[in-house]
Length: 218
Ligand code: G3P
Image (cartoon, rainbow, N blue to C red; front, side):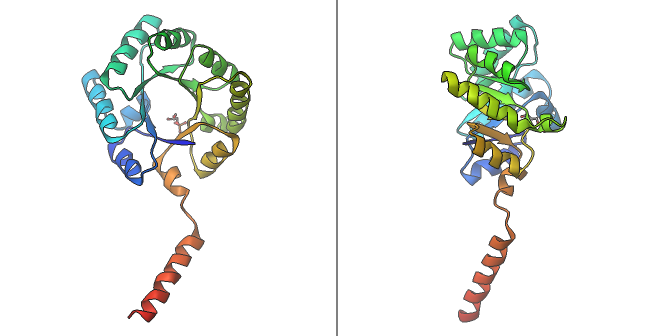
C-alpha cells in the first residue's frame, strides 16, 4: 500500500519524506488555507516546493466547478511539475473534466467520493485515483471502510486501473484496515503514520536492552 501524507505543511512533508516511506502528498484548499497560503502565484509556488521535497505524486485541487474553468485550471496545475496530479471533485462537470484530462494524458484524483457510484463513474472517466473520505463517513455513523471494500470489489470485477486512495484517514486503525481491505493508497496525517510505531513493549524492551548493555559496559 502506498503512503501519502495529507497536508500542505512543508516541515511535516519533509519529516515524512525523511522517514523513507513516503509515496506522495495530497492537499486540498482547506489544507492550503491552514498553512496561510493564498493568491494564485503563492499557491502554485507552494505546489512546486512540495514537488521538490517528495519523489511521488502531489495532488493539487482545482477551485473552479464548471467544466471550462476546471480544464483551464487543471491544465495549468499539471504544467507546473510532472509530479502534479489534478484533483477534481466528484460532480457532473468534474467527471467531464476528468475524461478530458484522461484524453490529454493528465493524471487525476477524483475527490469528495462518498459512494461507490461516484467511484464507478470516476473510473469510467479514467481517473488515476479516487479519494473516498472514510473519516467523514465515520463522522456520520456510516462505516467508511465499507466504502473502500465496495469500491475494491467493483474495480476488481472489471479490472479498472483507477487506484483507491483512502482519504480523510484520521488514525492508525484506519491505516491498518485500509491495508487489510486492499486500498491501493492511504493519505493521512503524520501523527497517524508515525503512530503505527507506537508500542509500550517496544519502548520498555529497548530501555531494558540499553540498561543491560550499560551495566556490563560501564
Ligand atoms: O484527504 C481528505 C482530507 O484532507 C479530509 O480529511 O480529516 O478533513 O476529513 P478530514
